[in-house]
Image (cartoon, rainbow, N blue to C red; front, side, top):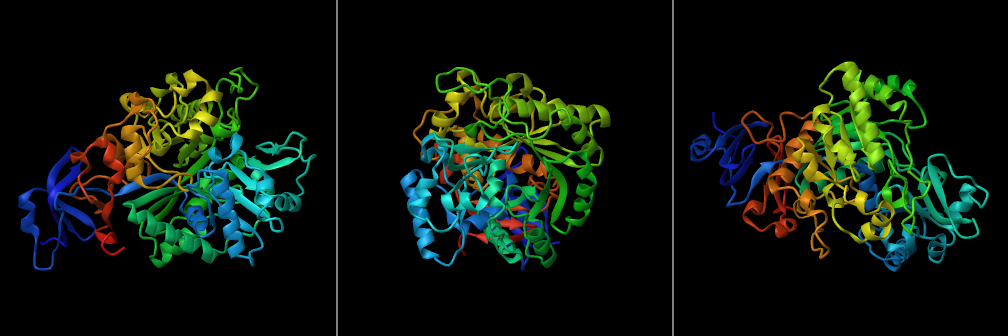
Length: 543
């Protein structure tokens, strides 16, 4: 039988490395991998793609991403990538002036490093939008910048107490300063107008086009549910899965309501059945254990330091009771759910591993594939626990660089020893842990090749900062494997992530062979073509 699609004339990344030069695809599957002998499968109707020395590899998979909120933000006041307070304020002014009919100014993506202490003030927004409420989450979505009108509508004043899971930043007089952290965001966020179902579907399809252009063929949406005013994307995924417009393969992580306990598990079972259709499956539960280090909410074993280097009383926040967490995870595991943990601080990482260990002890080593995302600070004693527990390290490589935010908002408050425990990709891999990779977009760019660049170099693309913990660098092969076979594993997409006969033909052609160039040029690599099931979903020639 002749092939429908044939790739020849370039390196092919197989599980053994770039060891082949030709691949045949029939229907939606890879049918042959090899060299010149594969060309015999070319028939009169075979589409032949000349790689011309470019690398063919499995489609990238993002193991932790939020495409619908990202797509919505792209259509709103997008502050992504702006480096100064002046730039951010100017962007808000321009957006608001161009849309006088909008009752609220929504969007987000601002960087904490652009503002002193990482906490912008309401006065900055009041100067450009005095008469309409403004609500702008930052790039990591753990804090929001609001103006006085938004605070007024929410009834937030000097005497408003902090919610249990958040903090209202205040000025010297005790008045709300304009930044809301974690659960406090919802005090305003719940008042903002929600996107419509049509808006969410349009955002999903816009994001999907963008992700395909980056070579991404599958992903795990890390939040299916309602959280801090973010729109639940479940309906958009189901609509796209039913009408065929969902061309990617998607796993949805059902949100664990941290205000409730085990009584919600029957609801998650119902959602798993109701939300699984076609290329969308919802067999994962997302458990957000802590916050982020920059605002002091990542859960640490030892206290944060103050500006003078002295220990404070703050050890961060545990959003789910660590004493109950093993019980919850054990029950979820017994029901066949995968657990996807947000675990950023070393205490959260240990709590997650303890919970997985409890589940393994009670249920045995089931094929539930738990994974821990973010892993900013990992105690060295916990690195070796991942492999025997079958817990995957879900890394966000773009964060593992010495950026300004690190110096201003992280290292001084962690101290030198803990700062050296950050993003231990190399140590985890050497310990035998499996690595998966993701972006947390819109927190950071979803471009896997940018992430690969940082994983290999531990320097931002184009950056001139010192190499960040060089002993934690990954090889190019290891970084690409994390974005392909590693993420395919956590997504339970076992017939993807590898270029082998019988696998689904989810494939990417790059514009070069990155193995042939210097590591410092990895970020210059681009995607030429993306295929899902043998069907081309992106071509740079047609973009």
